[in-house]
Image 1 (cartoon, rainbow, N blue to C red):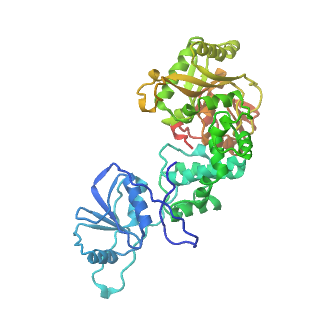
Image 2 (tube, rainbow, N blue to C red):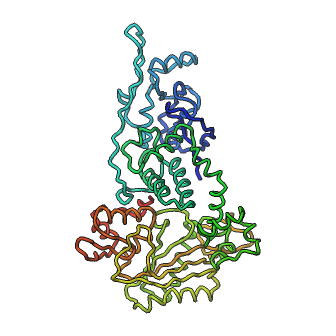
Image 3 (cartoon, helix red, strand yellow):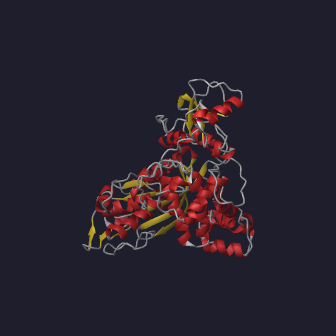
Length: 510
């Protein structure tokens, strides 16, 4: 997880301070070489200055640690131009007449835009040399940028993988996961929705003013944001990460086939390590859990894009051996553009197959892989899909299509650009988690939309119910007003039925 560190952003109610390590500085690519920035620490504080320096560097700006002749722009907060000039004089620095002296609001606008913005009078700090004319004016503050109306629904927001608020969303993900472990669904959803909204923002939250007008940020969420801004970390997140129950559940659920009930049982029995669980003769494991322990090291390591593509070839070869006209589509996080994942999901559908051919396909594929020695684990769930059954009212309901949960043996030689460093010495293959779903051809658009996943899909169902009087799931779309099923040949048509702009898969990373 990325470090939950940030910066001080002005005074607020007193509370015991949390000490934390500042964000580590990594080499950044400089995009704007004509600008050399120096951020003044005076009246700003070390922590906030460090945070702004790191953030500006990540955005491609060159920021100097110390003032030098190469500096073209000096940025200050809560200082007048004369204050900055006085600081330069105390430091015995002779400022160039070309030096721009700017309020921090200019830098914040630059970072939001991802490039230098025009310097206007509201940004420039005026240096008054004639003190007889009155006191020095304070810095002119930028009026808050108007927050474009942000929907509470992820399906009305475009969310790419470029998350510039990971410092907050990482914290929310931890808190949501902890509430899930406690089976407190309400609190888990609160933090999941907050994380989802912040992931869609095109700017980084630097102060509490930036949260104005943003939905799904209740008092509890805002308290966490404010604490991270001020202290560089969240005391609640820190407590969770050090909590024995959370750490144990996190470890136990990392085993394929282990859920909350089993984790609770092992925790109450006093287990804290997997080695103790594995060696305890009194415990019995399901077939899935035995496979989870047997291939644990492979399954907890990330699946790379190259490995996912290699699995895709493997799946297509097997499917096309029996149904040459079948469509095989990689879904899940990889369809949304992710470079790594924990498993690989595929949707299979065939326009020319009979119901019996569809029902037999996965069985034939499993038999083929078993003969080739590639099938390490298989759990095939038969279809219970009913064409006339209404969509589920639950936003996270599973579908009733035939599906197969697998662990496949992927030989390294099949992976393009495979990194030998990630391979266990002497081992020529890696165990990969794979899910296969077989759906009727006329339901392919709904299944594809559902299996592409993320919170986006759950919010799409919520939107359909609350805003359109419709019911949506992986099987179909029901119009409650017209009392008919709405047909769709593509995802675009489903969006159109719902009155929504189409959002590409890589913009659904909510």
